[in-house]
Amino acid sequence: MQPTPRLDPDKLQHLVDDIVDEVQPLLEQGEVAAYIPELARVNPRQFGIAICTVDGAIITGGAATTPFSIQSISKVFALTLAMHLEGEPLWQRIGREPSGTPFNSLVQLEHENGIPRNPFINAGALVVTDVLLSHGASARQLLLDFVRERSGNSELSYNERVAQSEAECGHRNRALAHFLKSFGNLQHDADSVLDAYFYHCALEMSCTELARCALFLANAGLDPYDQARVTTANQTKYINSLLLTCGTYDAVGDFAYRVGLPGKSGVGGGIVAIMPGHFSICAWAPGLNRNGNSLAATAALDLLTTRTGISIF
Ligand code: DON
Image (cartoon, rainbow, N blue to C red; front, side):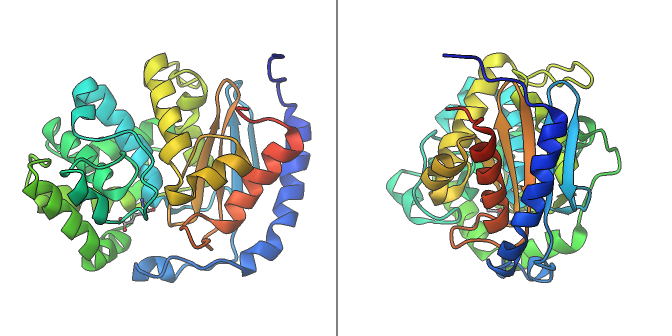
């Protein structure tokens, strides 16, 4: 098999400009997440895209520097931290299989004795958050420090209103946390875990910051900006594999088919994807399809890999 050719940044910029134009009609479609009132207030006619290459190039289009609620994309960084802090024992408490159910579903948890299917559904992320609490007084601060360092923006912060809104409307998450607790799969009290989880979802970052933050996953675990070793090469493989099989809810098969890259979406409309050895990318548009993935951001990633012919396959 031929090695994937390096992308020419100028050509990539042209393609990104075309994609920004082509996705505009899609911004009229899709629905912003309505179950969290603060997210329902977001203007759906926004689109941004940013690509960070392992050689240091940054290609952007549209509202690439506009901060948005990263929501479940935080689960990637929380897992990265938990794998580093806890190591293999983490997998005694969380599975590594796609769930095939909505991200906030309760049904599987009872059948499977309180072991969530994977770290990217809510139940799995609650266990990951519980692990972080075992390794530091503040799981909120741990994640904030991580994204500030990896994005290069020390001002990144949580949106308090979104965090409050998550807490006020988080009935399913409360049910999941107490269910996990009843199976003995939370070591801390459910409220402490939920508090940190709600804040993690309420992080605000732009496409450029998210792509930069995830770049280590495209570079075998090494951040090319400061040469920091974030994950081992094997941990990087594990995280990317989980992103491919579990990162986009129960639409993971369709996303893999269309985009061909490991990726993680959030109900704020962001999607981060990884082309190992080449680049990380984040696309954002608040309108979601019925599976909770951004409609226009998925289309943008589809266009990018289809037109360049570059994907992990
Ligand atoms: O837990 C929630 O309801 C949301 N804040 C989760 C966000 C999300 O993007 C979907 N999750 N897997």
